[in-house]
Image (tube, rainbow, N blue to C red; front, side, top):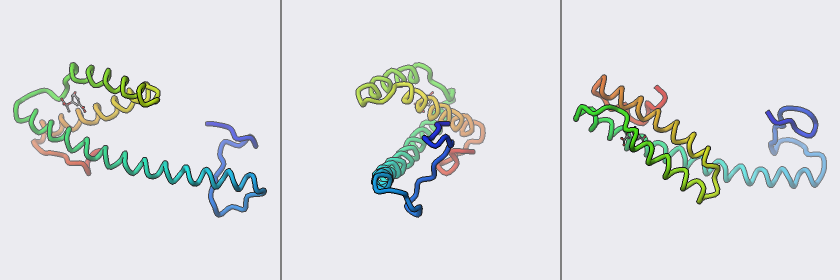
Amino acid sequence: MEQGASGSNETVIDSEQDWRDERTRDIVDKIETLRQSIDNVDMAIVALLAERFKYTSSVGVLKARAGFAPADYKREEEQMRRLRRLAIDAGLDPEIAEEYREFVVTEAKKRHKRIAETGEDPGVLDIFA
Ligand SMILES: C=C(O[C@@H]1C=C(C(=O)O)C=C[C@H]1O)C(=O)O
């Protein structure tokens, strides 16, 4: 964990506190504005993840119907190359895009397996099951 200037591992920053000087208060205000943007981005990401898992679950239902295996490594390879390129173009570390891809694809395949075993679409509310 990062160490703050005071040597502590954590600084809780909220508006309740009485920040000691004007410069610190100004910094805290800026952090709070940035945190609102971070919260907005998180909200969009969660909505988009829910949408992605709906699509992958639908693929899982169709794969189960056709007797196809959960994984398609050729598709995964293409996605990896595409996402790394998109990340670079967007100024994002491609390793982050790769970790994201690994996480969602692994979860999607777990759902495909469950759909094939139980014959049920687990739905988006079941992502962590
Ligand atoms: C959703 C699919 O199944 C799996 C999950 C993938 C994904 O989450 O994007 C991609 C490839 C497959 O390993 C698919 O084949 O399209």
